[in-house]
Structure formats: C-alpha cells, structure tokens
Length: 113
Image (cartoon, rainbow, N blue to C red):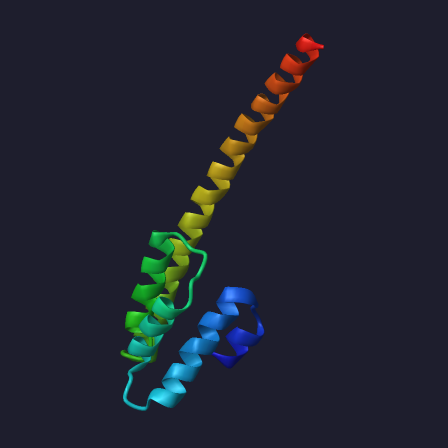
C-alpha cells in the first residue's frame, strides 16, 4: 500500500493512505474491511461500475491464498480494461460529434456576418 500510495497522487493516493492507515491502526479490522472503509471515506472520481470492481477486489484481497488473489486481480484487470475500451470508444464518438457541432457553429457565425 505504501508503494501504491507513493506511485499515485490526489484522491488515489488518499485512498491507499487511508486503507493502509486503517489496517495498521485497526488491529481488529480485516483487510477487506479496511479496503471497504477506505472506499467509503475517500471520494474517488469513479463511476459506480468502477467502484463496484474495486469493492469486489477488496473482498478477495487478504482473504484467500495467493493464487486466488492473483486470479481475482486478473479478473479486476480484465474488467477495467473493458471499461477503458468503452471509455475510449465514447471519447472517439463524442469527438466526432463536437467536431461537427463546432463546424456547424462556425458556419452559422459566418453566415450571420
């Protein structure tokens, strides 16, 4: 968690910091409980589906053996890659729409002048 915190900034670093602090100070909290509490405390700029994926990852981390955790993280990575592809497609589509709107607005202004 410390290296993840050091490699990020903003709300993401705050999430890792909160998660690490809660787990270290809690004593009675499981890793999954610390993860869940950190997700609730830190306002991450994520969509609901992204938060759900992170919650699922937190439910597995620290609860099962290393191989099961690795498989869970691979599943999380596949889910995030799928969402990244969807976001890229949405960005491409919106770029075309905004370009067309910009050209139309420019032509409209030219006609008015």
